[in-house]
Image 1 (tube, one colour):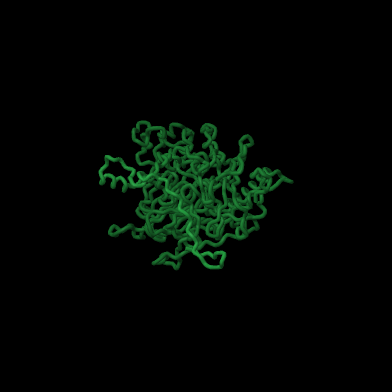
Image 2: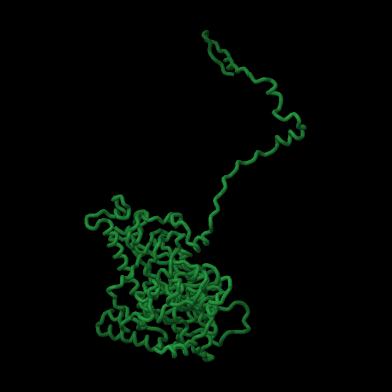
Length: 588
């Protein structure tokens, strides 16, 4: 109780405030609100019950991502990346790259890309036999995963209209294995030319792709099948390797030749492998004009390997050569206008010259939808990668028998996804159209063993497509890196080394490859330039030459994109970014 001072100056206790009268009837206050017919025990149980939770709103059932990818019904507006929704500023009536809502470059984005960080294998180091070289695991990289692909980027003030970013690459600047385009368990030497893996089958692809012409590279086995041959008394898993060519859709946690997106060769028995089905090397058939002869030569003539060539052993050098027709012929096939009666050659009018453009045909557009993202101190272009399509999954299924498609009644050959015919240049499914004048040949220690594959599957869009469920826009766009990449796979410690010919020498090249490099060396010795090395048509050359072309193409594509956006922004006197943002406030 508080004290207050009265008028006489003495302290008096303050009276408490009055309590308002309770007008509630006594019957209401004393009697419980219960049914008079209930017993006391029932009353107690009813009072102790937990109140029922509020009714939740029924959730809308949505299809899984895998089903949306297969059906193509996914919403493009809901696709997310590491920067949120992939939403472009504006759409254009003509093929053009998209610009995204990205923040302005940071000061460190203008710096050269940092060298790749490598970590030793623990607890035991990975050492190459009979050498002092060590293999490391790349760290802190944006790895290519299903549906997404990453490429190094750098900010440049000269490219203001394309949001300042252009392509770049860290050292070494030559054809090599790609750290980003490899399974996370793969280990490499610092020059990215040797690879290994301590687990089951894993794969790594090179940073250079074959798109047209003839390209050659070599591999050397450092740990695999012993020189004396396979050990039948060995206990536990043994090291093995595979090698070949793979497209971007091929999974990295499987060997080369696992599905329809890659063609491989095994070290055991030296067998070609495609769709996880082994075959044999054979002698390529020469084209003939007589239909009768063609029918008589439909069955391939298989090669009988000598005992020393039946396995790819440690120390052996294997050469792989891929031959592809020109992109002009390739484009006719994927667009459905190929006519075998008219298009009788591979598109190269001269054996040692690039294809001649046809005035009546539209040029092949290269459209690159890329968004710059920052990851662990580096800047990357995030790209929606190509994904497997349903026709290709049915094609690679174990129950699909291409020789009995017309009479097959298996689960993989019925329904709307049925394959009605074996792959051919005029197949109803673009993904199952093949390329005439294409082949993969295998050499061992400089000698031709045979042809492993012919009539490779086409890869230009729409044969290859990104997932629309992840945000890809409608249209078949080639980004310039669609093709067949040199690829290797390792199993439980197998070690393989690649040679792409960047040093203008191979370990054991065939005669026609050696003649090519000898001519180049003579031209340079007499003061010649690199003009003789530029796209020599169907003439064979090393993958290292194609890498330099690929870098030059990347530079040209960056310049073309900058000019394209410059014109969209109003050209001379326009505002940077106004064509993409639509507000005229700039878009750096």
